[in-house]
Length: 237
Image 1: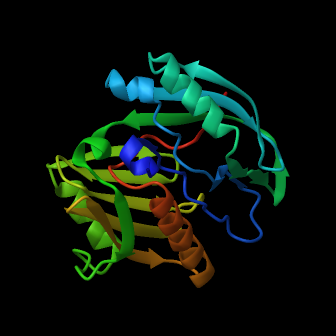
Image 2: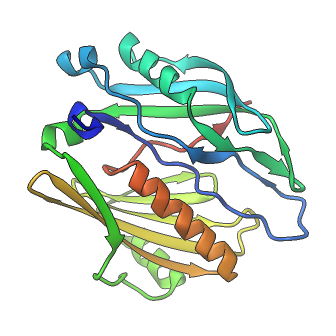
């Protein structure tokens, strides 16, 4: 039985944002390799859901250490599943001036039974034939900000727009200095126990930056299917 039929947690990685050459800006730690935790059968039986926030150190080698529960989901089985899964994840470490360094971080893991209840057993991801609403990021951003039916949230280097009660969201990204921007729209279509994820992408910046950001986001979307995930990895104080 696949992990889809057992239920799974969803995530939003802070997509890898590359600093411009020659700057001293730090790039935040990002996810490199991960898979959703197995939804504990005890939690499924009790229909338990919630968010576990883990506190951990991401080493300069990208290996997580000293993993603990910063904020409990309220369910011991969910908390334990989050910790066990996180120990196997790998990260791109925080880099300052190109040099990797250890980082204390907070990592939210959201457990939801949404896809389990929908009967989703498989997912595919592909480019969307439906064009983006506008062909410039400036116009697209203005359009999104005017829509009253979208829930908005801002995180470091990314602004999210989520359509209420729909499998559709937009992510507006920018470089650390704010000069480069990209936007990706993702919409989901459920058909006979299968979730189709379609993405559209606009980017204004150097080709390497745009391609790297797109590749990273598509890979993360494939590994972590909709519905829209919780807040991204955050640097702890």
